[in-house]
Image (cartoon, rainbow, N blue to C red):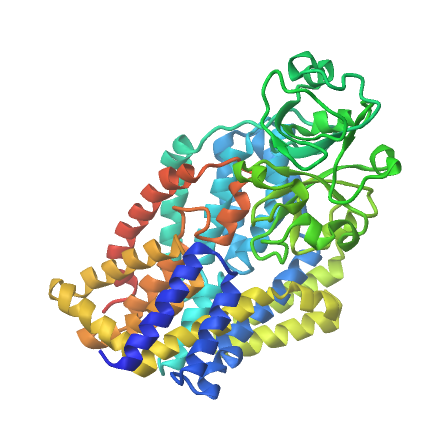
Length: 593
């Protein structure tokens, strides 16, 4: 091993640790790795920055715009309104319809956006048909993941590996090259989720609801004891208001800042901040109680908590939101989102370490908001928060809808028949949709997930550094020396297993960027076609079911579904193992060595 290879391994090892710990966002780590390669001279400037001009990065950015244009048409809203009628035909029929629709959409547009579209409608079935969100959200996420591996456009990972392949001088993936094997995976996963998976999926019912809003469980909130509270200096055991409202104090912070543990004989004093856990209906009642005031991110005025035009909404912090790791106070949330107030966060045990306003937000957290119909639009139009409460559908413009679908068909068709490369059709399609008015230039810029774009540009440098220094060849030769005598099918199977294990604890794109060059080196060492090895990496990188952090959609459903970490292990592990077996025999059949 040369010094350069050792240095590359050290930098990538540090990156993997940072990916796993999530101390910094994945795009920050990815760009940091690229900078380290530049500073150490592993890559020159042109090589280090080539990820920004890579066809994969540009294609992914363009497809974000195309996906946003499709959603803007409002055509997909009609499906969300029909879910309730499907529920009347039985839960099996509902699950089948939901997973098929999510899979079909995810084959052509961003799977995270698909889950964001369908999640509120799925949660709403708890109210209309008494179906717990926990029974549907995991199948929704898994269906979107499996649909995404059916075409080149399904996920950014597919496009990323295709870009690496093309950079290595090999033919890029065709739009539908992955489809047959992808459909085998999808069919297998569908059967599993309708049988074993359905039996393993937990039933965790939501609490009572408030009006037309959706109850997703209890929230951690805070109230302040005022001077006119009727039971000042009396112990908790005698507090009639708390007993009547079913408020269970978790912690008391005195006016001087002291944190007091809650015991039955603890006295309630003026100025106390009481942190408690309850549902939305209780929070709604608190505003009418004399001597008690809800505490929010900023000081509440009387009109803020009594205005009849305001109502409660729930919004989920999306995986790539800039709100992640920031507090409500730091963000100045009320000013940022047009007077929308945060009055509760879905309860996490570590929230007791700091005041609610100072709690660092995480991807998947659900915020309980108070806002008017006008002010909530700031949330509705945000990509950083997904509004889970019922909102108005997009108005359908039939002409623009048809034109948008025609443009999508041309993007796919021209690339499929190799008239133009996919990067050319994707960019041309995005520009055409802006010119047709399917979305504005501002909406197009906003639609692009720049964190993903930066992350792709950064992780591509890892693969390039491995390839340039010979690190990929070294790893590939070592793997071949260890298990190569068992044959290429076993090596390919081992590579698939390694990929899906890595992608469950770190980014799927980072995993693919690391292992794709190694897959090419392994194929070269074995003197076989590289396609099966590359397909193993590509498919496995997106088949992430075992952890909530393995893929963005798994993170999104974690809190709304009231899931626990063990639920992913219990349901996702058998599915990953079954698909591993399917891949071992299926990939060589469709992609011979």
